[in-house]
Length: 293
Ligand SMILES: NC(=O)C1=CN([C@@H]2O[C@H](COP(=O)(O)OP(=O)(O)OC[C@H]3O[C@@H](n4cnc5c(N)ncnc54)[C@H](OP(=O)(O)O)[C@@H]3O)[C@@H](O)[C@H]2O)C=CC1
Ligand SMILES: O=CCCC(=O)O
Image 1 (cartoon, rainbow, N blue to C red):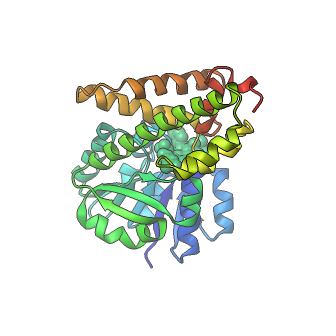
Image 2: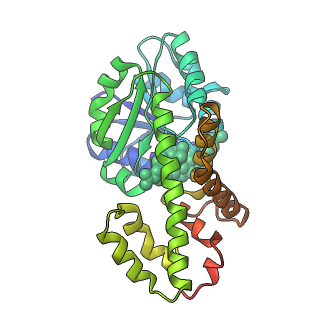
C-alpha cells in the first residue's frame, strides 16, 4: 500500500491517522508541535520534520488543521507543502476552511502540476476514531478516485461535490445549522430548569420526538453536569459560524439565527471557554452556570 502523508495531529488528525494505521496504511505524520507525533510513532507511523519533507516522501498528503491561517501557513510558508508539490503528487485538505482559502491552495498546487482535493468532514472525535466520518470532497476527481480506499477507512460515506469550494461551503452550511441548534438546545435546558422541570426529563422527551438527534443525546447529559470535554473545540465552532456568516454575506442570505448563535460562541470564547467542547456555549445562556442543574 502506498504511503500517506498526514499533517496536523490535533483531535481529528490524530484519530484519523491512527485509524489509517490500524487498517494497514503506511503513514508519515507531521505536527507543528512535533512532540504530538510521539503517540503516532507508537502506532507505527513515521515522522517527517516539515510539511515539505512529508510531501517529498508521500504520493499524497492529507492535512487536518485548525483554521484558514493554519491551512495556508502549512502550504505556503518556508518548508511548507508547496515546495515539494509537483506532477504526480496529491494534496487533500480536510480542515474546515472557507472556499477562498481552499481555492488559493488549489491554484498554487495545480500551477505546480500537483492535484488538489478538499475534504472537510462531518462528525467529531468518536466518529473519527471509528471511521464513521462523512467526507465532503470537491476538486480533482481523479485524486478523489485514487484516495477512496483511504476515505472508505476514514468515513462511512463520501460525497464528491464538484468544483473546489463546494466541499468547504457544504461543511460551513452544516456547521452553521449545528451551532444554531446547540444554542437552541442550551436555551431549552436552562428554560426547563428555571421553570421547575427536570432537564433529564426534557432530554427523554426530545429523544422520542421529531427533533431527536445524536448530538442532543450525546452532549445533553454532560451539559447538565456542566462538563465539556473537548471533542469539537468551541473556538473552531465559532470560526465556522464566522465563515458561514461571511458566506451568507456574499450571497445576501439573511441569517439572524446564526448571527445570534455566533455572538453566543464569541461570548463563550471571551469567558475562556474556547478550548472546551462547543457545548460549553451552554454557560452563556442566562445564568446557566449557576442553575440548579
Ligand atoms: N474536533 C472536531 O470535532 C472536528 C473538527 N473539524 C475541523 O478539523 C480541523 C481540526 O480540528 P481539531 O483536530 O479538532 O483541532 P485541534 O485544535 O485539536 O488541532 C488543530 C491542529 O492544527 C494545528 N495548527 C494550528 N495552527 C497551526 C499553524 N499556524 N501552523 C501549523 N499547524 C497549526 C495544531 O498544531 P499544534 O498541535 O502545534 O497546535 C493541530 O495539529 C478544524 O478545521 C476543525 O474545524 C471538523 C470536524 C470535526
Ligand atoms: O466540525 C465539527 C463537526 C462536529 C460534528 O459533526 O459532530
